Structure formats: structure tokens, C-alpha cells
Length: 233
Image (tube, rainbow, N blue to C red; front, side, top):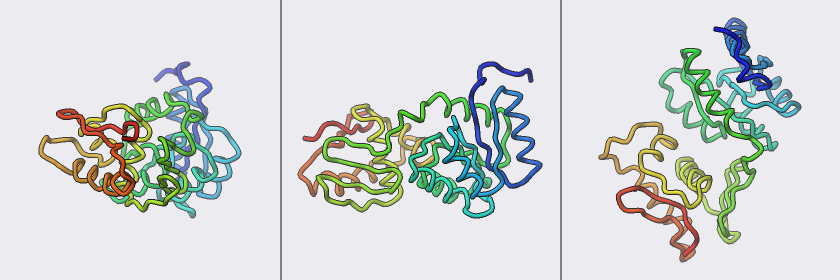
């Protein structure tokens, strides 16, 4: 494939401890026009990730400690919001959930094709990391992605990882109607089949924690479409 000027100036950090795989990924991305740095351990990834500005980070889970999950958590805690594409074991749902909960933006199961890697990176690098807020605030509802803390009117609220992920999705798209299909795809990673009520169940859980104890109705039902996080009522 010919070098693509489309990605010129896009800098990517690849964190992979298997030398052959790291070299393959590096050469493939460079053929696409990306500038690529390599890190072979969690410590190297943390140093590069905090010292350099990257447009995206391709981060393998199984690297010399700290592992990929912890690297992602520490980068987020340090206020580094470059999009993270996590490389996970094939069909490991636990890895995917843990990765998203640690602050990763997307994941790619191994083995993968380079075509899919390119597509995922294109989607991630279209976002501007500088626009990703460290703390999300809607009225008196506050969510901190780095510390995984939620408060309303200064009162701490304990959420499960899935409840947190659902609330974060709502708070990143305030006022927008999110369909059940979109929510399932972004939070649960499976397609909406028209019968699953898992979204409705978790919306009820969220309402019981962030709305009802405070006399609010901020999560609105849009009949026949989905849900949105609106202004406090």
C-alpha cells in the first residue's frame, strides 16, 4: 500500500512487548503515513505517554508491568487523554470491560487485520483529545473519568462499572437522544436484537441512584427511541 499523506503528522504510540508483532504494526502504520513510537513495557509506555503528545495509543493488555489496564488508568489520572485502542485477547469479554472501565476508548481483539486496525485508528484520531474534558459536569451532577467518582450536589454516589459507563455515555452527549442500539453497542458491545431489556434495567438502576434520592428526573425516556440526559427537572 502506498504511503498516505492523509495521516502525515499523526503520531501514534504502539505498546507491544512482542518484538515481531511490534515491528509488524509499526511498519504497517508507517506505510499508512503515521509517525510511530514503540514501547515494550508498561513503564516505558507511561514515560512516553506522559512526556509526549500522541494522537492515539495502541496499547496491548499483556505487557511487562504495569499491564495495559493500569497504564491506561495512570495516563488518565495524569490528565493524558490521547485516544487509547486496547489490544485484547480473542473473545475475552472481561478484558474488554476492564479496558473500557480503565479509560480506554476502543478495543481490538487479537488476532486482527491491519485493515481493521487502520479503521479503528481513523475513527479515534478524528476526535480531538484536547476536547475531552477531565471532569464531566451537567448541573450539579459531576463525573470524573480518571478517578471513577460521581457526585450530585456534592454527595458521593457509588456506581457499578456498567452504571458508570452508562452515565459517562449520557454525560458525553447531554441533551442528545441515544437509542438502545447505540447504548448497547457503546456500553455492552453487543447488537440490539429488539428483545433485550438490559438498557432499560440499567437506566432504572441509574435513576435510583442519581435522580430519585435527589428529587430529580434528569434521565428522560423518549418513547420509541431511547433515552437522553436532559436538564434537571
